[in-house]
Amino acid sequence: MTYPPLLRLAWLLPLLLPTACDKQESVAPDSPQRAIRFEMPALGAAAEVRAAADLPAGFAFGVLGYCVPYDVTTVSGSNPQPDPDNASAIWENKKEFSHPDVFNGQLVTWNGTAAAYAPLRAWEENPEACYTFFAYHPTAHLTPVQRGNANALQANSVGAPRLRFEIGVADGATLTPAEVAALPDAMAAATYDVLRAGGKVRFAFRRLLAGLRFRINNYDTANPVTIHDIRVSGTFHRAAIFDFATAELSATVEAGTYRAAFDLLDGDRTVQPNTSSVGTDAAGRPIDYVGETLRLLPAANLGSGITLRVEYTSAKGERKTVEKAFDEMLAIAPQRGSLYTFHLNFLGDRFVIMCVTDNNDYWDGFDNDVTIN
Image (cartoon, rainbow, N blue to C red; front, top):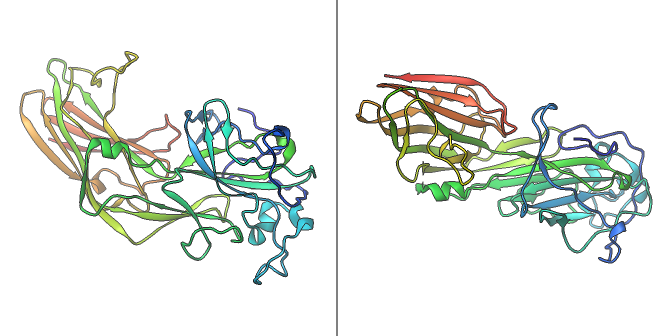
C-alpha cells in the first residue's frame, strides 16, 4: 500500500519538514475542497510485507489535531498566545508548546464510503502549514487526558497527548460469553507532520490490548472430543495510561485491579476425529476457534493468580476437568497487540496445551507448551 510521500503513519519518527501554520477555521459543507478529510481507517501491519487491513463500516474514532503552538514566552502564563510563525516546526520541535487547536476529541465515523465528521475544519491557505493527528477507538473507553494527571484534555493543554483506558468490569464478576465479546478492543494511531498537499489523512491503528483465543485439535482418528467449558479467571489489570510523548507509544498500568471469571463457551462443542473444526459459518467455512476471544490489558503480566480451566469429554468417553496456572503456559511478558492462541491438543487421554502467538492478524509471537497426561 502506498501512502503520500509527506505523510508519516503511527509510531514512525516525524519527517523534517520546514512548514508553517496559521489560525484554524471552520469550513462550510459546500466547500469540501478546503476541508480536512480522513481516508479509510486501517489496522497497521506488524511487518512491511503484510498489507494493512481496512476496518469495517461503522468504525468510529476520536481525533486530536495540532498545528499552531503557543508562543514559548507565554505558554506558562494564564493567557498563552498562539505563535503562527513557529507553526513551521516539525512535531518533535514544537510538541512541548502545542495544544489541540485543530481537533480536541472530534468524533469521526467511517460509513463504508467516507469518513464523516461535523463541523468540517479547513486546511490552512498556507501550503506549508504543518499538522499532527492522533486517533483512538473506542471513544467510550479511551479518554484523552492531560500530562501529569488524569484530568480530561483541554483545548489549552500543552504537550503530547495521553489516553486513559479502563476496563469496566465489576470486581468479582463472572462474565458470560456475550459479555466477553462485548469487551472493548482498544486501538490508537498517530500520523506526524502532515501537509495539505498530502491529501486525506490516513490512520493505521494499533491494538492496545492482548487477546487470548482457543483452538481444539483432536488427533484421535476414530473418536470425537467434546469441550464443555473454557474459563479464564484471576485478578486482572483495570486501567492504563498510553502516552504519545515518543514515536513508540508507551503504557503505564495503574495500580487498580479487578477479580473476574470469563466464561468463553456458551455450550458444548464437539470436535470430530482428526480435525480442528467445530462447525461451519454462514459462508460454509470451517470454524477452527472455540468460544470468544478474551481481550486483556497487558503489562509485565496479565495480572495475578490467573488460571485456565477446561472441562471436556475425552476421545475415550471420560469426562475430565483440567485447571492450569497461566504462568506455566504464557512464559514471557504479554505484549500489546499480541493475539495468543491456546491450542488444546487431544490424542486419546493425552492432553497437550500449546500457546502460539498468531501472526495472521498483525500480532507478534512465541511458542510454549504444557503436557497434561
